[in-house]
Image 1 (cartoon, helix red, strand yellow):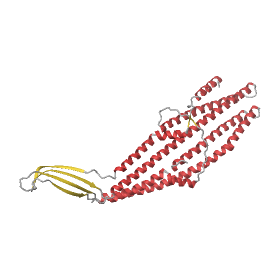
Image 2 (cartoon, rainbow, N blue to C red; image 1 turned 135 degrees about the vertical axis):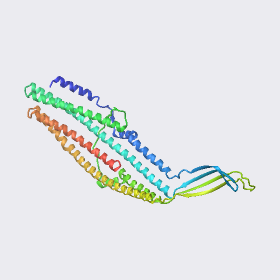
Image 3 (cartoon, rainbow, N blue to C red; image 1 turned 60 degrees about the horizontal axis):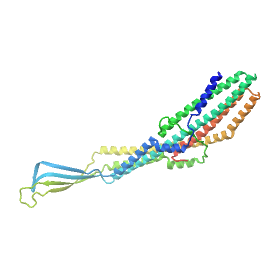
Image 4 (cartoon, rainbow, N blue to C red; image 1 turned 60 degrees about the vertical axis):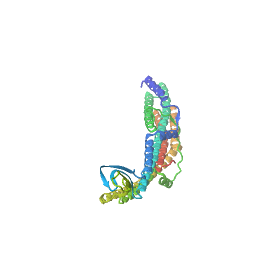
Length: 417
């Protein structure tokens, strides 16, 4: 490989590394707060919940009263004079219990939308955590790869000196340069991956396009002390998925009861006032206006329609119950699946920390010393370097998977752990 070309690549990489992302550090909590305040999906869920709450306030109200006016084009003569104008007002009153059930059903719908609003916040929080941990891993991968690049650069210099002293073939120098080119390629891909994650974060945060995200702070493997039965208990109490399905059963029960009340009539009460013109009699009540009260009921006789409505609401109630059973099964499975994943990642992290990473570092140091003293060939040193790089990256990947599993579990049970 042409050394001048090789040096130019390294120079470009170093320059671009300084502009990979802003120097300020961004915290996970600050991103979560920003997302909860600005994410359009959360805002839409909030508005939908509030709209249902407002509706619950007026569905219990009576229908608007009716006012009427009639003009007699051809007057109707009465004993006291001709009828000229007729004024009326009436009010329909549903059968007792109907408005109450409507209000209760709508209130349950508002509660369902409230839980869906909470679920939307939980979902966005989970997505932000996933993004943050992914970016954290990319940042660590960039740092580790840059450190490995510096090691290979030193290795290439050692191989170059040995080649100049006729102690090693030129092939070792070329292999070092090829390995260095691979690391440079890896860095370019990692930085491109970070830009993609930043774009995704801007979508969730409702930020302008192209806004950069600062460096992530350190993410440790927080101790997880919950037992499986405790997690099941928490999910039963706070999982938005389960709460929504329970509330939907209650709403469906109110709607079924309301459908049964449709067999009963509604009432309409009213008053009519009739304006009487002056007559031609000598009676003392000549020309006096008249009034009358009235009452009406609707007659629900189309039993085929009413029976179908009741059956519809009964079927929807059964559907809500089955959906609740399915939600319980899904939540139980996800809680157990995530619990075992968390415990596995916990053991893996401990293994990397106490054994795999220290062993890889020792193997690399031994291979480096042996190569410099001529006891092992170049490939042994190169293999040791690759193992160290992969082990360090895998260690941080296990930490990220551990944290993401906890974040997912928090979404499932509906509560921060």
